[in-house]
Length: 366
Ligand code: GDP
Image (cartoon, rainbow, N blue to C red; front, side):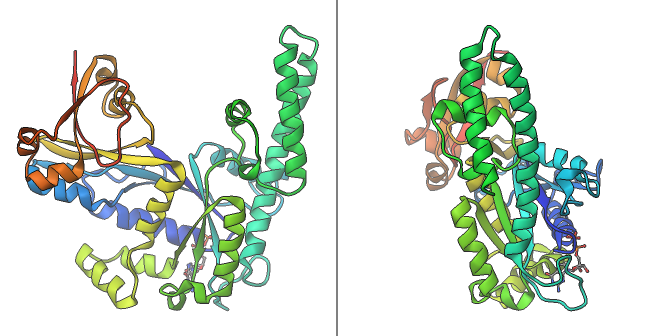
């Protein structure tokens, strides 16, 4: 599955948000809530299509796809120098697919702000600086290693990598995030292999007060975050930790009513997952059998056998064909069988790239 790490300065509302998300997301669950590590939560991805599909298939079980959230507390100024539990936390960030950086946009005189006042741009700057410093350290170690290899048998490749590393170091020394670094396609592949922190897909989560949640752009600090995020190619999600905490205590019906009363179109959980999918370039496809209707997550441009591998690697290995019906065609026909009879089911081979909303049946040799 895909993992999103929640980071941010102390007292910005990370734990509140993490707890609310994992509680709300686990509520409708067939999926057992993951309790191995209290800082890790598996959340069902809300998707109305899954239930529409279930309504025409009548399966025994309906299983949503999931996303994992990790509460990575402890990032403070000086973390890259090993302050606090610094480096340990940076290691946790290295392991996630995307980073959700919570910044505080709510005023509350009872809750101390680590820098004295509510200033989300400064929050962003502090955390980003630590991440950039950590990346610089990693690049320094890489430079040392590469220099020693310059006279070796792969001198040419080493020289190319070294030139990339040197340009990256310059970029970071200007205080810029790895996400905004421009390079060739080949260099991009190399860059990804470095597993830096500031090249990870990044979302800023503005934790606003309950009053601001419905019209967040009235809040000038939210606007400032949006502008900065746009420059960095990062996503933005606006939510209120307080509202999310209340939502997580409610049934699905009550939650909808509560959202409507507040003038909100969706929960923060929905918004966060939607933005996360967008940022990570993910899509959802479905399997629809009598036993189980289920949603699965794969990156865009995944070919059918590799898409099948998330179900079971045996299907990838023995892949013959995929029977594919689009979600819209399945719903319009009223059943999978009728869709097939109407000629809406296609047979696709191993080069087919699975599309968002495809309803797929894989044929394979055992
Ligand atoms: P963390 O240190 O970033 O994990 O922050 P916490 O989630 O522990 O929150 C710190 C304090 O801020 C707690 O007292 C929360 O109840 C409070 N808090 C979190 N989100 C909100 C919010 O949206 N509005 C207000 N007023 N307080 C919040």
